[in-house]
Length: 143
Ligand SMILES: [Zn+2]
Ligand SMILES: [Zn+2]
Image (tube, rainbow, N blue to C red):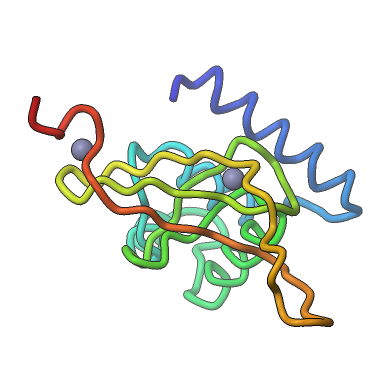
């Protein structure tokens, strides 16, 4: 991601939060920035390391709370299988995200817009759904 598109993504995220009546606080913004900057999925541990020096040096609960916020806001998805996080540029609150995880190079690509499952138990309110698909990406797949 170029510096320019990163700035744009952060601005869009800020607007998205305002629309929801929430604030993208400096630490939330910094965590999102780190996730977006990364080439692939980022572990919470790496975020903690990256946030160590500097103003408001973040303690683990702060980082986890920021990640929770970003997940609920639909700006970040957790890749459960890798226990890592990927940035999302779709800014969606609802609907499923589908993650395609390459087990060779670890690349994660998101497709989204999958419908919410129709067979949820009655009265169950889905807050987030992430479907993880495993396989090999186009680069790694043997020709
Ligand atoms: Zn998404
Ligand atoms: Zn791959």
